[in-house]
Amino acid sequence: MKSLLTILALSFAAGIAGADPVNKCCPVTGKPIIPNCKTTYEGKEVGFCSGKCFKEFKADPKKYAGKIK
Image 1 (cartoon, rainbow, N blue to C red):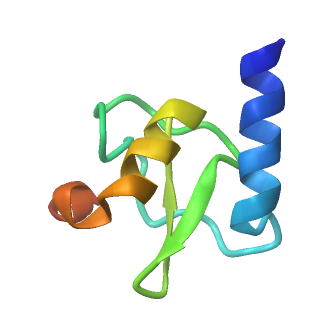
Image 2: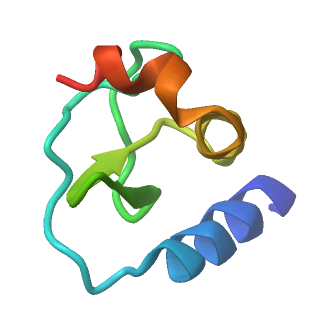
């Protein structure tokens, strides 16, 4: 339950009303993304498989930028 609340909070903070993510797989793990766990990076919506990956990406987005597909 805590993970779900974290994901929902992160989704809200990242802007739920944005466009669909440009990627189908998480740039951190390569796993499929989940709805509403996303952020905007360089004008594109980027999705993630978990709140943990969202946090890792936000800490160092350039490390994962090349994996956004």
